[in-house]
Image (cartoon, rainbow, N blue to C red; front, side, top):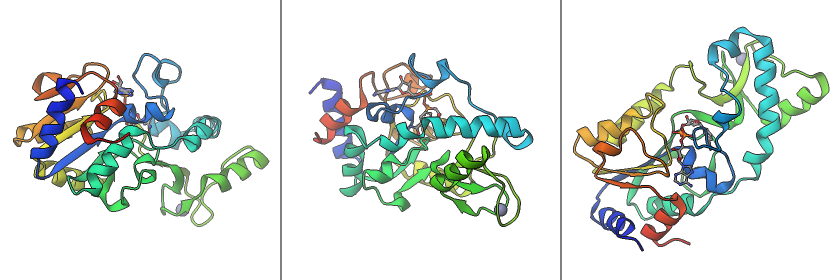
Length: 249
Ligand code: NAD
Ligand code: ZN
């Protein structure tokens, strides 16, 4: 165990109420590319803005094409050592909530109860109507898309159907933002795992935690803009760091 991992282990042991905050980096070891690593998605395609999605059938078609083309990667992904370590911390009552920017559902798949996961950017494993919130399963939408070449509008209200994710330009989910803030304010230890910390308002939570007096830990392969204010920064892979600190293989 490196000195840094030992330090993280000691911080976890001393904490009464920790929060884990995750980004795309925790899921790369499960085979899902992140955005901003040198090999990330960002280098290949730019995300589709919410305004473009709602105002243009062509952008919606492009969004669904990308979704159905990339879906198998996400579907095949399983929780990795980092997810398992976080799940163990939750199970042991050392971590009260996991605030995630991820949309892959891997924290749920690792066994963390839904009520302890706060999804700031929604979830791409299902879809819903933007007007009436009716839920639609991706498998059903794919059948129609393959047959008719489009994803149709909502059967109930004619509204637009979109994956249940928060796109750039879309307003943040109010309830989740409130919960994330409450958990952040109550935390004595705040651990960031695999986020470049450039997407706001999500990236504001580590700052709030630090200002409120929590110990801030950042585990990320590359430097982030908040490394300077963090109490412990570990530039290593999340699986090894968290697995080592928590004792999970
Ligand atoms: P990001 O891509 O901006 O940053 C990820 C960071 O994780 C990078 O700085 C990278 O160096 C680091 N990293 C990658 N693998 C790592 C590993 N194994 N160990 C340690 N560090 C590692 O991700 P972000 O900050 O979460 O912002 C991207 C946005 O894109 C988020 O809003 C998220 O919703 C979305 N997104 C989600 C997924 C997913 O659900 N898995 C995947 C791609 C993008
Ligand atoms: Zn509807």
